Image (cartoon, rainbow, N blue to C red; front, side):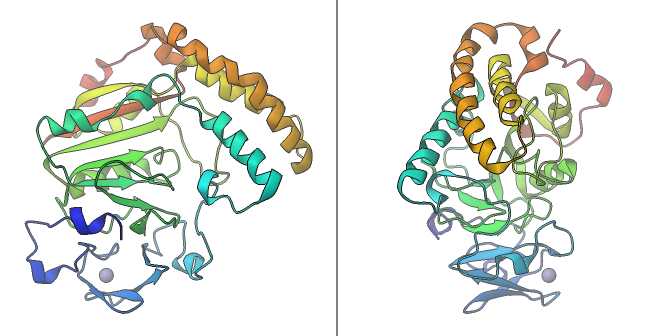
Length: 325
Ligand SMILES: [Zn+2]
């Protein structure tokens, strides 16, 4: 539990003895979770949630594409597991090659990756209690509860954003990092984020627009800038922008154009390297190509930082927020 000790959320609506020390509640009915040696059990519905290698699996089994049983062995990574990087279990040359390909594919991009939401949040909340959805295997340089649908050494608990296992008003900020394209019902997840936020809490979401399918079956939707804005109509905008401009879109499409010439896994591996090398330089054109409003029409993705409001922005007012050509 690297993070929960320092920033464990405490709901003002719950007295201390109703909460376990991590602040988790049942993802099904928000009932109190009782901590046992290797599992949590809900005091209301009696559902048991296993703790695998120290990571609680707090999934609403009936409501999720993930099953608690999928996580049930200490070695299973569970869920959508293709994060590459430090979770790569290959060795030797293959590992070096995959790390190289991963670095090429994940090199910093112009735009969203440069936007850090924390300074803006800290102008009003000095030490925000932060929940990260889709934390992956990346470490953070700030205190936060890290969650994902897949287990990793840095994740505090496994949870599905459709049913967040925390009480109402638990956090000052929720970060949804490249997850809303992977969920079946993005609006439900946005509503859950709003529920676990304090009355003036912040949401930060970074979501793709023009990007080919990734993570296989666990990829459901894309958002225009305005579609992304509407998801968060219960929030006032603090900042927003492109995360990767049209050149980064071209990088993705070029890579897919070449790799998809074959369905054979072995051939695709060679094509993928050729595609990475061919498409890599394109990304450096974004500082040039992302300057116009029109660039929003072909952005790779968008980020949005918003602050919770009590009533929704009306759809016709959202239309007025259009950015593009
Ligand atoms: Zn329950």
